[in-house]
Length: 159
Image 1 (cartoon, helix red, strand yellow):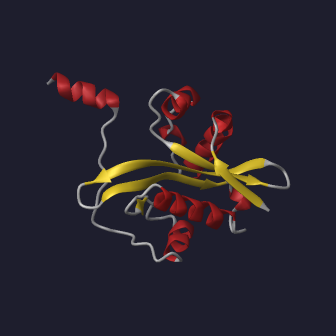
Image 2 (cartoon, rainbow, N blue to C red):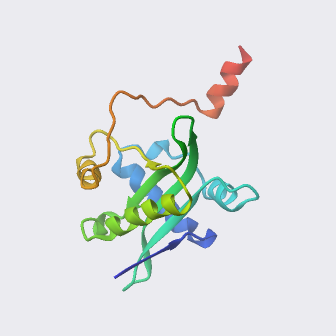
């Protein structure tokens, strides 16, 4: 019914479409400033910084999902796999495809000798939270996401 494999450079146009679909679902399409060219360089250039799986519907051979990950280092826990984005196209949700994809990422974390995996979920995304609760995932409160955009960093460093 579904096939999961490591992503390839030629998959990126479809992956970018899924990223845009996710941004619309999360009510923030204007926040996507990444480009296909950046994804090609960052994933397939001389120093790749992320990897991804694709989820393919066997009957149509269409990519219907992706899991984009990278590695981070915790001073308390060691090497961790960070699941940056986990996307299954809306029409395929609730059919078991997402479970297969998520469990493939879990296996990847073990294959790579990680001490665990991490990800984020929006507090209003009840379907996702319910899904993660089925795995008894620890969903933390009390931490805030912090970030600066490159332009903001440049401005702050001028001071």
